[in-house]
Length: 487
Image (cartoon, rainbow, N blue to C red):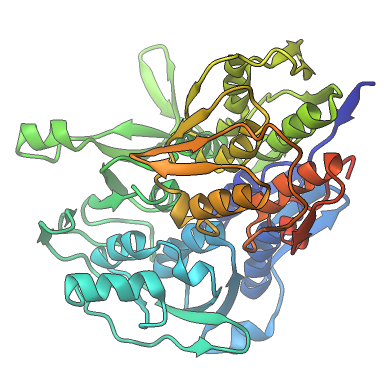
């Protein structure tokens, strides 16, 4: 039996497009739209700003230069309900810091308030943003204790115990000017300049330094900000989930931009070589000996490929149920999770491919040896791989787990605890997550999702095979998927 799975588009791609559309007024049509919770939070921001859109079936249309009257337009602040969407928070924070006509208050869910954001806020504040916070905002509170309140911000956050919400205030930064800064303890550096939204004219090129070792979304949000403002950016330390930066680059290309390297402003050539500096530029093409700017598109229409972050759970389903699964291949925007297929091929899975489709046809030829697998580029799929590894022939050793504690839950400990509940053994030591074969039927238990959609998606596939398993809060899958074929 051949099961063709039609999956909705990637929330990561959709939210990047929606964020870019805040900066650039373009008619946009997105086909194979995914109305999951993370995307609906972003559309909620559109509602708050009065920006109009139309949702017809699986097609979303954003309308250029259209506004609708809302109560929020008369209030002192924009009230932005982010809930648990880290993608929304990180992507739109720079927009409200530098493009908003008035301040905004962000209402964050309890779990999101504990996830990393300090490096992004610090970078934005250093170039003129005015973002305030409180001790209830866990990552910021930790930073204040460690760095002696280095941000020098007012404490203006409230904690809503009944709703488990945290409020983050963002003042409009459009009238702020940059200061010369050289802080060695966190490597934040900016050159003197100004950001002005009046006529899109700039006194000098400003440089923002981004520490994105906790999340690649910090860098992606700055790249999208830079497409609107004349800002250069530098990246220090290793970027987490670096492969997702290429996805952002593809979205920038869709809007008529590309990334160019620009180190000429450094007097010290050694610094220029050590810290590459990049500038978002309009695309250009050569016509004879003249170089002309590409016209920024007035209309964008894109049919999204299936979300390969979700596809990985269907490879698990195929393995457990021993049925072939077929999914349409990627044709446009880059998706790092597509390369989970290469990892499975190396394990011993067999796929059949043509120009349009890829099918998992055989999972019975698993390598009979200890497997060493590097998941640095796609850490979101470590959960799926870990539970898949329970059914391999020998121990699996997985590296690239260092960012798992910063996700929607502490995924590293969550993996170990849930594998123990199933009667398996998993250990983390010296940078490696070791998962041992189960060699028996999983124990009857209630699997813990920790309100994390990726645990829930994995466990739903396990439950299709082992129907006696129970899952707490499986509804949290709605964060990333609006529906699941076959389930």
